Length: 243
Image (cartoon, rainbow, N blue to C red):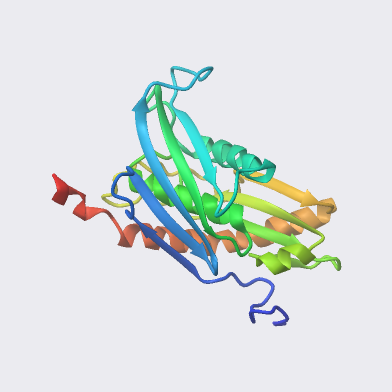
């Protein structure tokens, strides 16, 4: 395959993935997710009694707070908060702890491209670490479109600036599985061909979008495998030591 990217990857190749959990003592759950040099830390607080105003008292409420690496939060970060909230609401079992609020704090440690997908992956791992009941796991990927119509996966910051358009895609766990002996309730659902969230920027044709969807779904299987292996190898068996 052609290798014409600055870091030596092919167009379909992801950057190295890394995930660690249970990092913050005061949070109910936490996770650090990195894709290459893009690093995000997510912390989960809750469920806490009481919901925010105008929320449904019969369901749990999800609150997302985005913290950039430097400076104040702007319109892009507000959009990220909204996308994250809607994505996490769709994978959480909101009826298990009604009339509660779960807060997810997303701290950007370093941004070298594909930031929102990295944050979604970090938040999902942190929810598992916190024992929040989930319908299923989710994985996110960024697919970029070059001017010649070629799809590039998991772009760096420099690559993003050169692309004609890109899509943030969030898929459900690609293989049905339940985490053994884990704190979370993860229900198996036949969602191999589903999609949870799709956000596009720039101009692309329907065929280009479907091409991104195909490439993204294929790559999501690799991220799903990594996420499950990471979660299963880091089951928080040491949590009882503090008791």
